[in-house]
Image (tube, rainbow, N blue to C red; front, side, top):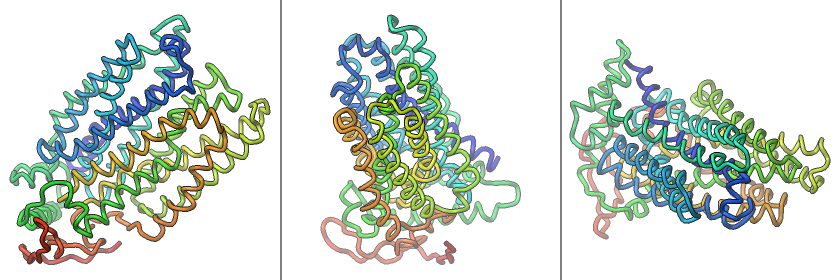
Length: 495
């Protein structure tokens, strides 16, 4: 089947990313519902709204870290199914909510599931992807996040027409979360486990069948055999030493460095300000003078811009230009757009200058476009690529849970209050971080991993390749020098 099956697997698995986008985006319209605000006796800039979003993100922290355990124990595929079922429980609780407690618990469950899915889906995709199209394959995660935002917005926009006296205005958008949950939980039964996880659990024959199904095109049998042997040799070396627990990620210098890269790219993604816009754009549009149905309509259009841009980037650009250059471009572009946004808002504090209001909407849209050509897809691609097999599950869990969701929890809680109290000045928090930290770190420390196999990426970090273990692995508190356990010729890598 080859590439067609590989892409189909990536797209379907990314239904988990769709849930990420939908669950994250649905509250944008729910908090814009007058019936919802009246039912729970709150306002759209209150600490209660911040709590609803921050509990979602807090649950995602737990879910991401949990994934580090379930992915190694139960596999990548089953972890995705577990996430879908947990999300189903959250959807039912939210849609049936009679009080704020049910909403908060439902959001915790939804966040728990999304945290689990947000780290499991990119790992599953990257381990199944051919190196030449890995950017496209893992980029599907961000694509489906964007589509989830689109669907959530238009479901919310349509439901708003039920009128302010109807609870359908917010209950139906929350209930709709259940649909992709059921599809994902059932559909994953028909897709294979990651070949690298199969190899790690001593199911070599099954792993070879999956590799052929994913990559064989009728004339590349030698390449498939070489890929199989590289995975086997690397895993053979890793199995010569026990690597229990989470501490090992921080005690082996090479692994600690690679963990830092994964965490950093997730933190930088959050500090671009994109999730603050995603959650609270209706508040931003109100500050620009667009209220009610207009604000929700603009947010619907906004949510379409990102996925279209992301699709163009992952299909035509990402695997050609690599990872570092778009991240540097994105940092500069987003910073300039936020400076312009802040300046415009400072001159239009009442939202009465229509031309400036339109310009303000333009720069919010521009942030989404630039993000989709940089951090959006690359944060998931790069994180999945830089983690070695030994700590891939736990490393991605930690990077997603701490770098993405913990930071997101903080901004979800403070952003509506900050936007209400200091308004446009809040944009410059992200501007300062991008200038002082994001750009220098990406420029001086990030590696180019484009079209390099997951096993050969070890070489970029000065680590073992195809069988050679790190010489400074700490085991039971003592420094041991471990010999190379598998003889393997190290191939030349062109980066």
